[in-house]
Image 1 (cartoon, rainbow, N blue to C red):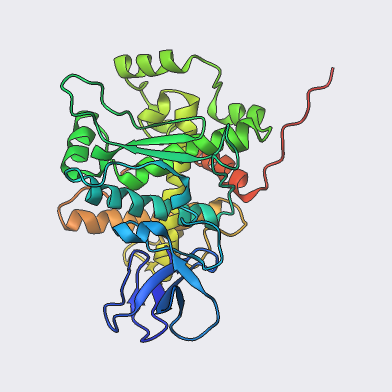
Image 2: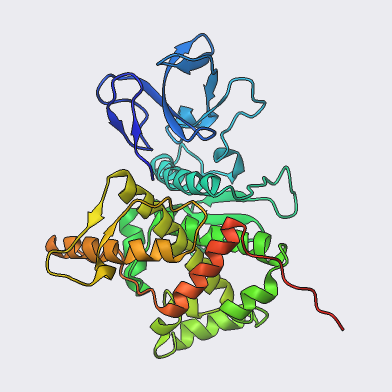
Length: 360
């Protein structure tokens, strides 16, 4: 994530800020320019506080403290590019639904920041009723014994259980499932990976290439998951997969690798924004040294991201251990995983050709 600066007083700002802590200016994010704008209200519209003729309105979800994005004042849309994909939100007057939904939206907007940066297609269900992207944010039913809401993806519809926004409940689930990592942002990045598998791989005529890297996805998905939960991951899975769950089925392997690709790109952009350099004093190995200067969303080989990522995670994991907490990034990027990440990198950069047609 990039850093932002108040156009009125030059205070450093962060993506989620709604007010400048220094001068009190109202802030809104313009997804077209990728800028957090200080704005002032004039009648029914908002104008750039530093001057300019652009007229904005806030997304309708700003009313609930769930969004700080701006839209053009003459737009027919009431919602921003992220919020217009919501199909169902929880009943905001019940219990902790409002603050939990606000947490979901914060994570979802970070996701959309990246998807827009990567220039990935974002069709709504109104634009594409069969395969458009939509979100259902649902709370578990209060009726005893009723089935819980399952987080997942189904042909463009991403469902997220509201309980995932409860930090204690999510940590309990993480422990029960033996996961090293479980966050709201991780859920969004994983589930959107399924959506883009459909859109860019299946419908993008790259299925043969994807299967050559991730395996045959035609195997029964339900049986594969059942086998995974019963038997666990194979011995030595770390050599070929980014996570334990990625071993369950090629679709999950793709989604897990996709999520980690977004993790890496976002974190490297943040490191670049802070001018981070890694130069361990007692390490002569050049692989452990890096100045984070690359644009992770620019065109180029995936090795550029990996070469910056490995020393960065070595450093931040060491810092975490100094605080007595777990590693920030407790995963291994094996050569096989890097190959899979290279596929996703070329897929999102638009440099991966379509499958060659089979000739008789």
